[in-house]
Length: 230
Ligand code: MN
Image 1: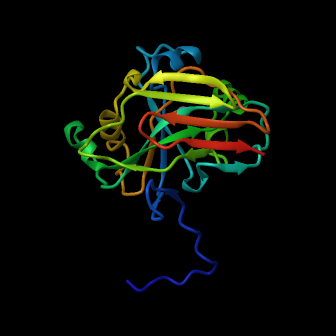
Image 2: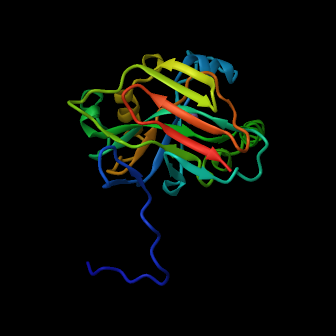
């Protein structure tokens, strides 16, 4: 097929940094898991044993690199941080088996699923979609991506600090649905493709970030995902 001619300039390819080099990882879509840590499900008023995790999305161009300074989002008085392990898909597929799932991963990163919590509460109460509570501009802070080695999934602590205040501190092993299950299950809903990111859910301790504060997500063995709200 001939290269298409566009009537306006084609959008820039969204991408994230890769640790140890200048080449970047192109972002196709961003999927997010809701309620993947029991204590967080309970703090939001849900029973993690009764409700399996579910998915929502953010636009690819919501990604922000580590160290960015972004404008405080409009239309919210309650911007929340959510520390999350981010999975980057390198090989696509549909109906991926759990035992094959980790072979589809290119790498892992630390991420922050920024959330307009007040708007999300209104949406929940009105049974409306979460898009504007979750998928706003600059809402996916992602640290430099680390190449997966021999199918190993990151292990250890996941933390969130707002300035010097430790807000979230959990172990990745507390995830209800492990990475391979999340990939397998998501691939029954959509055909995964190279460039897809999956934000795998947040542990307990979500809370507000105020204008002027810096929020850092840290995961053992990975680069941090830091953002300063302007
Ligand atoms: Mn989240």
